[in-house]
Amino acid sequence: MNNNNEIAIEVKGVAKTYDKDVEALKGVDFTINKGEVFTLLGPNGAGKTTFIRILCTQLMPSRGDITILGDSVVDDPNAVRENIAMVPQDAMAYSNFTPWDYAYAFCLLRGMDKEKAKRKAEETLKAVLMWDMKDKPCQEMSGGEKKRALIAATIASDAPILVLDEPTSGLDAIGRRNVWSALRDRAAQGKTIILSTHMMDEAEMVSDRLAIIKKGELVTIGSTNEIKKAVPFKYRIIAPEDAIDKTKYTEVTKIGDRAVVYLTSDTEAIQLVSDMLKKGVNAEASPVTLEDAFVRLAGGDIYELNEEDKKEVKVK
Ligand SMILES: Nc1ncnc2c1ncn2[C@@H]1O[C@H](COP(=O)(O)OP(=O)(O)OP(=O)(O)O)[C@@H](O)[C@H]1O
Ligand SMILES: [Mg+2]
Image 1: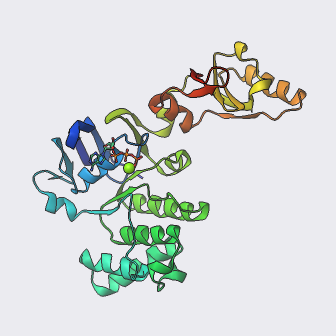
Image 2 (image 1 turned 90 degrees about the horizontal axis):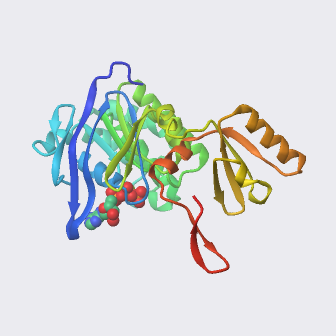
Image 3 (image 1 turned 135 degrees about the horizontal axis):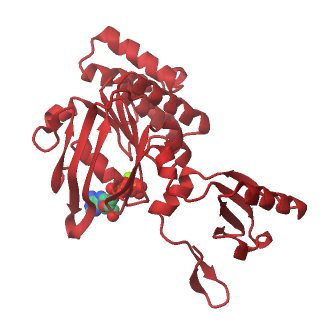
């Protein structure tokens, strides 16, 4: 957890244009504090992996620069690399390596002596529940197990900056919690952690701050609570669409045969839930979520096929 707001990473006007004029990043500026878990959210193709690859010196920006613990990714990528360990989005574990091989080798590569490397490898393999499988070749493992082995190796490396591109996609709920716990622990030790995810519960659970990127531009940045303020309502109530009188509410989002009704007044929310119960249908009420804010900030309109004329009809 960041206590001193000391800047670890400074992103200055970073832009990337791939061949054929694909403008993946259009000039983003922000800072990431030391000891912070910082999460990138954004629709598919928003530019998250492009940003992460520039951050990890796998890709040069077309414009701008990132300074990481004082070193520039443009002028001194070798110095940057010494401070970073990463799990790429499409990380694949080599088949004949074991989780132990990965974790121990990463530690040695980062200059630890053998005793420290063994200690770190053991600690992190246990943290992501891979200790029992430490000697099993990756080719005999499931997809999620391979991913956990790579996450363990990255965390074990003890680099001050840890970068994980969608680390928990494909992991079960228990595996995800263990990874979140390991990441929070490392942040508490002063490591700076940057991750990308599509999972809103993960973003909410693990992040100190988040940035939403859309079409290569920074849409917003802040804590979960700050970002949720983009939703001008207090509650979301999910109910069967045909049980809701949509003319009564300012905002209703249709999701197939369900409707999400957004409300601010406590009385209105209680009334709606009670009306639904009287009708004998289920209604689920909760405070607005990060997902509501994300869809509002990064989403486009939601369309559905109108059965009569087979045209797309805008419903939100
Ligand atoms: N090597 C490449 N060459 C050309 N275009 C690319 C390349 N890599 C990515 N792009 C394009 O750049 C844009 C941003 O891609 P990027 O991989 O950064 O998105 P992302 O936010 O990580 O998406 P996802 O959530 O799907 O992983 C997309 O339009 C993508 O098609
Ligand atoms: Mg990506």
